[in-house]
Amino acid sequence: MYFLSDIEHKQLLYQLLPTAREVGVSQELRGWSWHQPPLKPYFDNVKLPMYEVSSKYCPTNRDVYLRHIEKVYPVPSARMTLGKLFHGVVSDSLQAFLQRQELSFEDWWQKVRWQEIGEKPENVIAPCRKVWEFMQKTCEAKLAEVSCRQIHASELDLISSAVPFLVEHRISGELLGLSDVLSVDCYDYLRAIIFDLKVANVKEEWHRLYSVGYALVFESVHEVPVDICCTVYLNVEGSKISIQKDLFFANDELRQWWIEERDKKLEIVAERKDPGKPERSQCKDYCPYYGTCYG
Ligand code: SF4
Image (cartoon, rainbow, N blue to C red; front, side, top):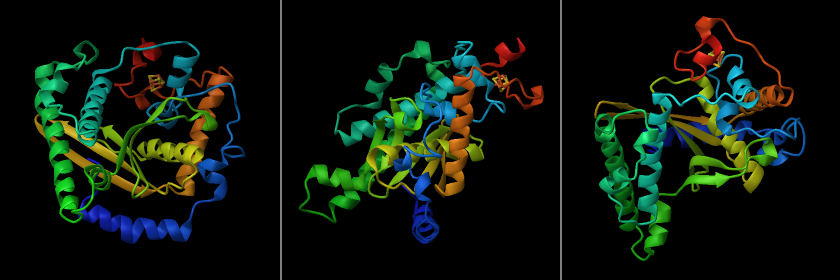
């Protein structure tokens, strides 16, 4: 899922990294500049989760107002719960591999809380198993490749080199006006890439905001530069899975866009301002607040 293909690796080495080195990132837009504008949050008393700052499915951000001010908590849509399920398959299978746990797909499947998933188990077991097996096979192949090159390395060292991922890394976004319990889908600590997993078949420009936001948070806490981000699109149709990646340079423009989004949303909550509704045609029918706005 998070391993780069040969072509993506070439793109990283010959396109993205040279651009990042040549163009660079402005110091005031590095996460470690959280104590000064423009990164310093204007409203100290509000903290938001990353998905609210980075999500752009509501054109006016009324979803943020409804959740925080009107206290509307809609039932998550089937689409959202399925996304959560596939996130779980990916992260749990990777964690099991990294920790050398004897956890089979069947063991994992038994622990899924189906009452929280808006889908029948029989409709999703095949793609879930496929993703689980895919993760295990690709990790084993990487480990075998590294093992035969480093015959004196310990198992721990081999795993760390072959699968260099921090998975569901817990980190606080407090310095940037975010929640203190954020979770990064994956961070490749050898290549310094933040990955964000999306279970979706439509790519949107604003999907990049999630990993850019995590890159800023990472820089604010760990004080290391993160120049490269990647959105991984996992699409499941029947028993078939497809994985596409959007690998990009987290440049000044994207960082500024993320800061603008954060500031607009913090202001809505701090000042209790209803931003109103857009033209109805702009609202997505899968929006969980559709019934509240148009019921
Ligand atoms: S229904 Fe429209 S206005 Fe209301 S929260 Fe959803 S996208 Fe925003």
